[in-house]
Image (cartoon, rainbow, N blue to C red; front, top):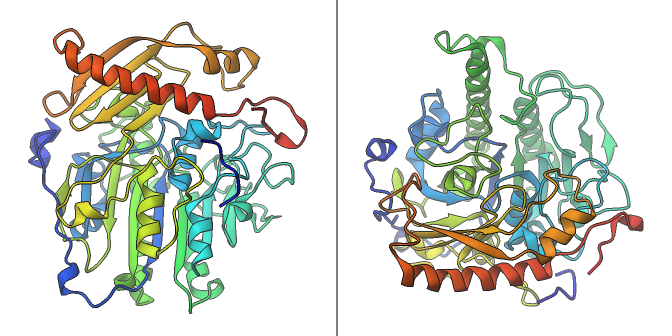
Amino acid sequence: MRKQTRRGFLKTTGLAAGSLMIPRLVFGRQEPLRRPNIVLILADDMGYSDPGCYGGKIQTPNLDHFASQGIRFTDCYSAAPNCSPSRAGLLTGRFPTRAGLYSYIPPNHPMHLPREEITIATLLKQVGYVTCHLGKWHLNGMFNLPEQPQPPEHGFDYWFSTQNNASPSHRNPNNFFRNGKPVGPLEGYSCQIVTDEAIDWLKKHRDKNSPFFLYICFHEPHKKIASPPELIAMYPQATKGDALYYANITNIDLAVGRFMKELDQLNLTQDTLVFFTSDNGPWHLGSAGPLRGKKSFLYDGGIRVPGIIRWPGHTEPGTVCNVPISFVDILPTLSKIAGANVPADRAIDGANILPVFEGKPIQRNTPLFWYFYRTRPQAAMRQGDWMILGELKGQPSGSHRMIADDMEFIKNTKLIKFELYNLREDVGQQDDLAEAEPQRLQAMKKKLVKLYEEVIAEGPIWDKLPRGRAKK
């Protein structure tokens, strides 16, 4: 459907990979709901097992405390294994390939989140929310230029953002823009600078008579990495590179803790839903724990990420839940909470996850699905405890340039080889059951191929057309 209008670790957690511990929503003790404030906090390349509450060895006391106040999801999935498509899926509720986000977006590239896509920021703004984006944007190649849509055109009233990573590193970045104007050199570390801006916005710039949607996108721990020396010194036994990375995660933790404290001081905690997660799995210094693969791969290490939700009065503190959820679920879920209408003129792939809070199953019409053309396997689908992965015939250029040969590969190549895993029994995806489970394989293969072909057909073709438009 094309858019018409712009409208070992397991022991540590005490869970088997597929065991079920569903949180209880305490609506029964509440007055009629008011629309909450909503905060999404996104780390960049944080590994599944980087935080202490996910079995990691890095010091993250604030995230650990945050998890004790809400729900920690063991099976939270990003929308893709790298930056731009993952963010597109989070904002639109749609598999990012539908919008043509096939990989991360290089500077000055025609690929972008099209104007026709409708984001959760746009929907929330339509029902009275004030909206703010802070940090890494990475949904266009022509940043702060009229050729492509910028944060305001995707629903954000206020923005303090970069096109991609903090430059020259996390320390003293010089590439931020605030509401279209260059900010110039800044002093400090990116996650703390972004947190300063978040606090300043809460105090001085939002309409305090309206609920707010605040989307905080840290650059850490994506390279080029930089960390405060005093935090590096907290890891004297680690190698120099590891200590630098561990300190980077701890700096995120400090930023989150400082932001949460400010919510308390502004008396906003009780009326605010906060969701902390990461855009994809880790690069080589981060930890995916027991999971197979890392960033850029469709095995769970590339797409399963930390996911913690706190909504006082509605989420049971200290709950651990392994019901699979995904970034594409954010739009339908927040739309339900805020009373916004989910777009009816296009495929919305996510599901409202609020029933999970009440101990009920999610009504998921479309299986969880992922596509990434640069690494094998290139397609994946999860249903219940089972995941099937499919490999495409041939190989694209291997670059992120999205050259003509890449578009030919994306649009015309077929799935030819399949793997099948039971994630309840094999969280590390080491035992391929494709031959042992032929009936299940065939049934899931049929669904995967159909979904893959549908999603690929909808995605635009990028080239150097004027104003960044895409061919159909």
